[in-house]
Image 1 (tube, rainbow, N blue to C red):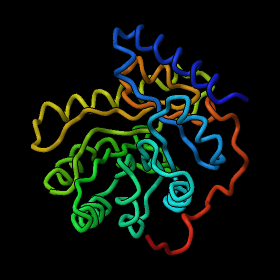
Image 2: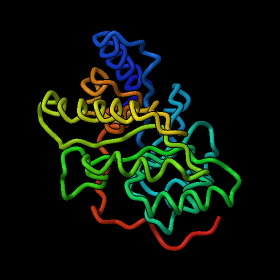
Image 3: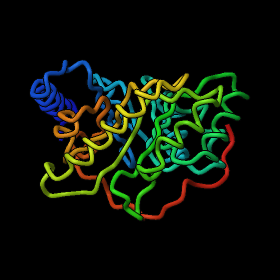
Image 4: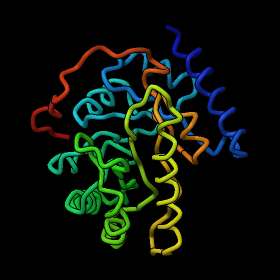
Length: 242
C-alpha cells in the first residue's frame, strides 16, 4: 500500500469536504496517526507532506523520536497518565487529551520546569461513553475555566472521539455538539483561552467532521492501512528517563 498515494486521496477528500462547507482546504490539517506503524512508513508520510504525527503512547513516541528525529510536529492523542506528564511536555508540541484538572496541573508544573508553555486541547466525551476518556460535555466549560489560569498552559481548543458507526452521517451530531461547545466557550471571552482547534474525525468519518468544523483530522488506517492487533489494555511502558 503506497503511503503517498493514500495521503493524496485523503487530502482530496478533505478538500472536497472543506468546499462543501465553504471553508478553505488550508483551514484543516491532516494528522497521521502512527500507533504501531513502522518507522519507515512514518518517514514516508512525512516525506509526502504530513506535518503532524499523532501518537497514543509516550513511550512509543520517545522511541520513534530518538530513531527518526523530530521532522514535524508530534501531538499526544492518547490518554495521558499523570506520571507521564513530565515526559510528554518534552516530547510533544500539543497534547489533545487533557480531560481533568489534576492532569492539567501536572502538565503546567512540568512545562514551567522546562521553561515552556504547553499547547493543550480539552478532550470532551460528547457521547458520554463509559469506555472512553474525556470530560463529560456538561462539565467541559467548568474544566476550561479551571485550567485557563494555569500560566504554562495554552488552551487551544477541543478534541472528541464520537461512537463508531457504519454510517459516518450518524457521527455528525457529535461533531456538531463539539463545535457548538467551542462557540459557547468563545462567547465567555476567557483570558488566555483560544478556541482555534477542533480535533475530531478519523478514517471513517473525517469528511463529515470537516463539514462540521474540524481543524485537525486524525487519520491512521486511511494512510497506513490496517494496523496489527495490539492488546487493548497495554500500558504506556515502564518508568522512563529523558
